[in-house]
Structure formats: C-alpha cells, structure tokens
Image 1 (cartoon, rainbow, N blue to C red):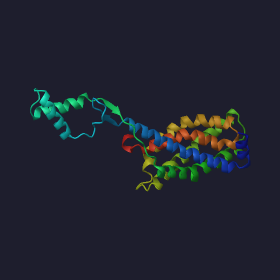
Image 2 (cartoon, rainbow, N blue to C red):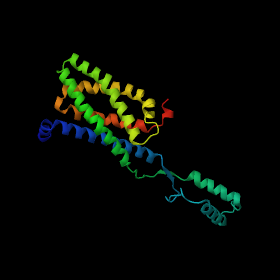
Image 3 (tube, rainbow, N blue to C red):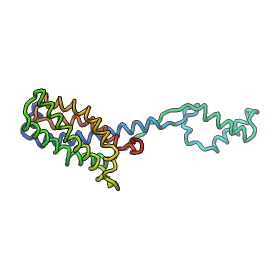
Image 4 (cartoon, rainbow, N blue to C red):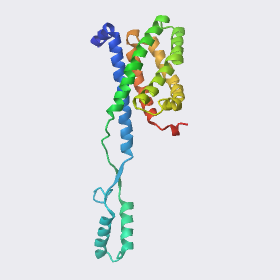
Length: 237
C-alpha cells in the first residue's frame, strides 16, 4: 500500500491514467460476462427419462422408437400412434439448463480501452486538477460548486465521447446515432450517481489519487454504459 502511494505521488499522471484505463476496460469485460451468463440461462435442453439429451433427436428416431413400442403395446399401431408417442416424449421430458462458454469480444474491449485512454483518463486527470486549483478546499460550498460544474460541463463531454468514440471505432454509418438516442437517458442517470460519488471524491479523497478513484467509480458506470450501448434504440424511445 505504501509503495502504491509513493508511486502515485512520484508519477501521478502515469499512475492515474493507467489505473483509470485499466478499470475502464475491465468494466466492458464485466458487462460481456454478465451478458454471456444471461444468454446461457436462456439456453435449455430437454432430457429423456434416462438423462440423455434429446434436443437434437430427429423425428425419424422417435418414429422408430414408436414402431418398436407398438410390438409391446397394442394400443399404438399406426402412424397416428407414433405422433402421439412423439408428443408424449416432448411434453414429459424434463428441461435442463445447459451451460455454455461465452467468448469475450476482445476487439470491443480494446475499443473501450482506447476511448478510455485517449479521452476519459486524460480528460478527468486534467479536469480534476483544474477544478482543485480554481476552487481549493473541501468545504460544503466548494464541494457543491465543483460537483455542479462537473455535472454541467464534464458529464456531457464524457458521455458524448463514449458513444461517439465507440461508434466511430466500430465503423457505424451514423456515429451520432447512439448519442442521439441514448445521451439524455444516460445523462439523467449519471447526474444522480455521479453527484454523490464526486461529492465524496472532492471532500474525502486526496487530489493526487482522485483520477483513479473516479476510475473505480466509473467501473460501475461504464458497465451500465457498455450494456446500454448494446441495447437497440427502438426499445429506448
């Protein structure tokens, strides 16, 4: 812990920017993992009475099984009986969730890291230092003023850079599409979340580590933004 503190004091820019970028990229990995688990829960396979997977069993196999059963059971003797046996097997088979391995889209994570490094980490480092120089101290009025200015100027810029930057790197036909449809909702949500977090930051956290603290807080926020960006705009209007 002491070594980390010395590192931040001796190399504040590198430590804060690298730390912020790492947390920013980690948020996308968390979001992808959460989405992968959600998709896995939606995948089910039917098992027969002996525990074998019947989700890929062909209709012909059921037909053969139905014909074999007619030798022992005189009640099912025609094709209609085979259909009934098939329906019974389908309805009586227990359902089991089958786990799947969700692959990480590393290209997407790299894009998130690039946007985080090129804009968010550097911007927050200089922005927070500038606020502290203009309005030093941790009194209620100073903290409130810094929080107000942060939400008035920094929040719209960082949200816009996220959506527009990622859309541009993804090669979207309209780089402003996600920004137009999702900016306002993101901003309103962020005002509640970031006002509280920045109040803690400006009042309790030493200036030398404020950028990496913002990166830690942004971990949760970026998970939300990454997830929100993957949603289709049609469901958000």
